[in-house]
Length: 89
Ligand SMILES: [Zn+2]
Image 1 (cartoon, helix red, strand yellow):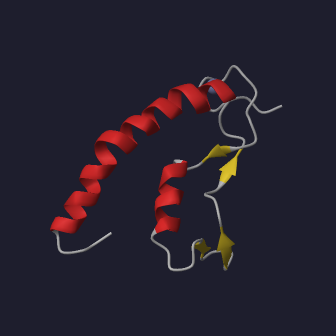
Image 2: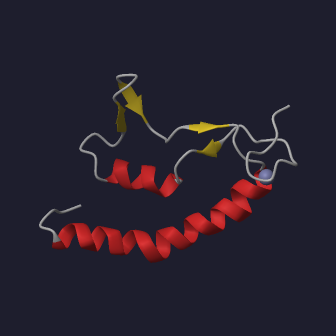
């Protein structure tokens, strides 16, 4: 049994995202193919990598709250900054 890499107390779930899922959704929504390209494996990828990293509580409550805050408050500004630099998302 693998314990959570954050709290170290509870068993991990099998499906903790390495990067927030909304980033994968953003990439797919801007892809002409509707999926991501995994350049290391040279294959189509429909979701970001997942693995047994966090317990359900840390994944959903702790990291979920950080990801929600980031998605609502920081990510939109980062996209605007990119557009101001002459590139478009
Ligand atoms: Zn945990």
